[in-house]
Length: 387
Image (cartoon, rainbow, N blue to C red; front, side, top):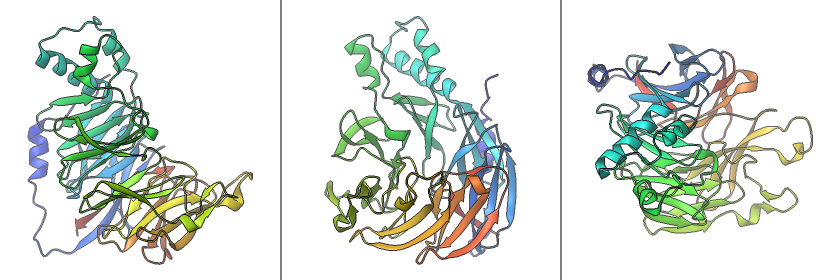
């Protein structure tokens, strides 16, 4: 049965809910999905307390918050749905099936162009099989950008219900293809939105670079050649982009130039840069001042064994030097974020049912929060909330 979106009036009410006086002290809350318990936990990372347990659809993963901290998106139902949480009421205020959003966007494109569906509904059937790679929220959480694993980007306005799409391979005619834009080859379907909500960054192997789209019109407005692999993060002031997989690259977004840092740390014996992740989809995160890039990686000494010790490294974005490193466990992590004040790094470890809180400078362990079965998160899932 299709999920129904909750009305915009309810969403408006939640947005205007009393958030407390400006002087009210805040605490950092990490929103972590419990994949095998159909819930999202709001965890106080300073105390280890569970502030809220929010029921969501089955098999949740990939939590991410809006920059103002008022909303959190979570992917559910085996990557076929997205749900939106209001962090002030700790409730789900909207839930949508990806296939329904895609169909809405597809039909809107045709209607605007004054065209009928040349496939007689066949394309709509194809859309029903599309799945979600990741979700990005606008600054206020009123717009969802869904990156499909099949190479399609969807933009959805929560309040109006308006949907648009880019990067869809019709295979019918050049004229129809031009209406939707060429399909993308997205590594692990990752993307980021600039702090001003105007630019969307998505790596595209078909173009051998990082595509930059107008976030409102979903049109390509620029590119950063050569940046096509791995996960990445944007500075909070939109000054730079940092990416780490096989190499450590930093892009100056004011001059649109790319530089590779940390060349001296490249180790051919280990097959790549010493700080590199072995899995390109593992999330990375920049500190608030963009001077440090945090990333998980497999210890090279564990290669070939049944388990590979998972580390978290802190890397200087100016020199490429490793500033700190901390062992997390013997299984992959799933979720890494920096607290808004830049003092803590939060790492989610599904195999051990734990959330690790580390000091952002030294990566020294602060606490380990034991949670329910198979915790998972994404990026930017830590917000500041009033007590």
